[in-house]
Amino acid sequence: MSVLSAAVDDYLALRRGLGFKLTAVGRDLHQFVRFAEREGVASVTTELALRWAMLPSSASPAHWARRLGIVRQFARYYRALDPRTEIPPAQLLPYRYVRPSPYVYRDEEIAALIDASARLPSPTGLRAATYATLFGLLAVSGMRIGEPLALDRADVDLAGGSLSIRGAKFGKSRWLPLHPSTTARLARYAERRDCLYRAPPAPSFFLSEQGARLTTWSVRATFVTLSHQIGLRAPEDHHGPRLHDLRHRFAIRTLLDWYRSGADVEQRLPQLAAYLGHAHVGDTYWYLSATPELLALAARRLDAECSGEGQP
Image: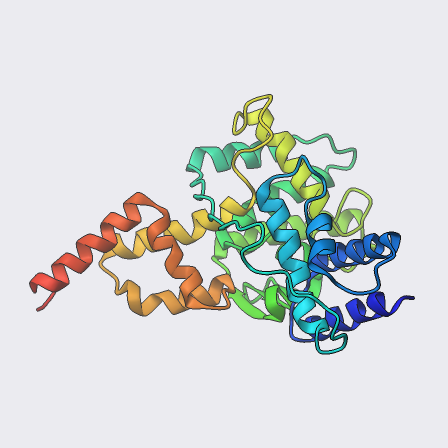
């Protein structure tokens, strides 16, 4: 193992110890090390980082900027160990990330997605039941896709109607209360699952047809296939509504319901942030500007308060 490769391992271990998963970052940094070794370079230089970042040449500027940013952050760490290290300037490959506008699913689109999931080819019926229940849970809970896939059976309290999310993004854990109808649906799935696999090889709550834990890749691939089937995406579309937009829909619908009912949204926002597992409540505030209807309701509430109409 080279000195640079060992430094990358130490850097990743340090940051992962702080709660960062860094799956893609780790993969990219090890690719960068292999590139440096092929080039015969033993330290980080701006020229080397720039050449690696701009691979492949057909990639987007955003892709290049992300890769260079990964090396830049590592270089700041490595400079203390190797004075020869050059930190690529921030103005190289400038790119400002623009958060995509969320797609707000209509009720009938979610119903169509769940219905199509329930008709998936499935020799035992488990695959269809798993995806129909999984997509339904994502829609009503606002969970990140990796969170329900990481659930073990012990994390699902069907008697108490709650989920325990452990070691999610930034290493955070949280407890999610569920609506009784959601709990009932999970219980029906669990009963069907246990009839097929009384002693499955994996402890996960959601099982594949083979009794294994689902992978994020397989779930996303199945979602894309179903999206084409039900018209969420045109036959040739490579982009469109995402699974993550189910999370956005949950947050936006919650905020809309609060505004329409006259609730104190400012006071309740930390509750929503905690439920969603946001590291900062500012991430939850983003939804206020993400949807025109929400922005209009927030502005109307502010105007009323400023004019005194909101006072008793």
